[in-house]
Image 1: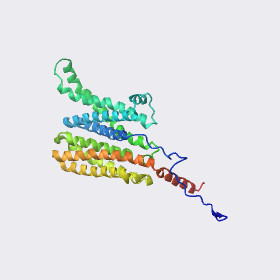
Image 2: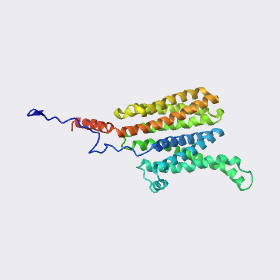
Image 3: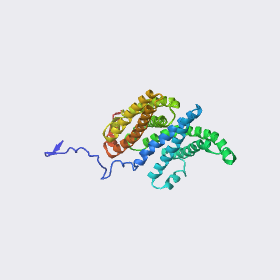
Image 4: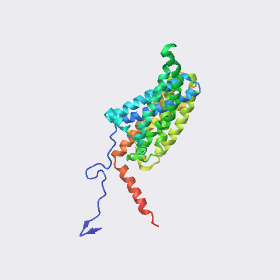
Length: 321
């Protein structure tokens, strides 16, 4: 349309900013949180393995599972507190319990899981204590207390393994928010893969047969959830392109290699170590890849604006009754 030879068409909108401000504020989380995602999942998967080994009479695998769970939750807590900047902030989050907040729920899950994992792991030191006196009494009562704590930690482990996926999806970051149906499954599979990997590396070879089946199950869960990540429309693009896409693809490739090698390793310590390292590395790559994908989608306004426009157009096309 023109008036007096002057074109009146409005030029295409540039949605790079809103009055000089970003369309969406990028997450302030640093890579501490990516490490937190990994170590929390590792702790949860290891607690489940420790409890399973306890129930099936595999003391070497039980010990590895319990100590890895404690190490993972300790590292996870440190990384979370370090990202918060001041230790008191973690304490402040425990002053309230808000079931509608994934962060609040996750803080309480972490606070419950940590002491239980610690008691279960410390109970493994009982054979080192003297057989008589007060320490002898501690030697006798520590194993049953550790067994109860280990099972209790395993009961909270599924929530610890998956709540971080819910936490990311509860944000406004497009690639995380749109992945809410699949992120918990990706993180659950990644947690089991990492824990299986540590077990294959450190546990006695004669006790690792269940870990091979667990690695296969973990791969199925993670591949299934990962497939859904790539089918969520425009916001799935960061999972397949750029640095974040390379990390996600590396995670899948390492998961496939680790799972295949685990199934072939039998009682070979060398193959078990190789498969275990690949499984742990796959979990690290996946967590950092998902974390980076969210950061990419928050920085580029098209991942926020284009889906909004598509939803608006769909709503306008619906004929009112």
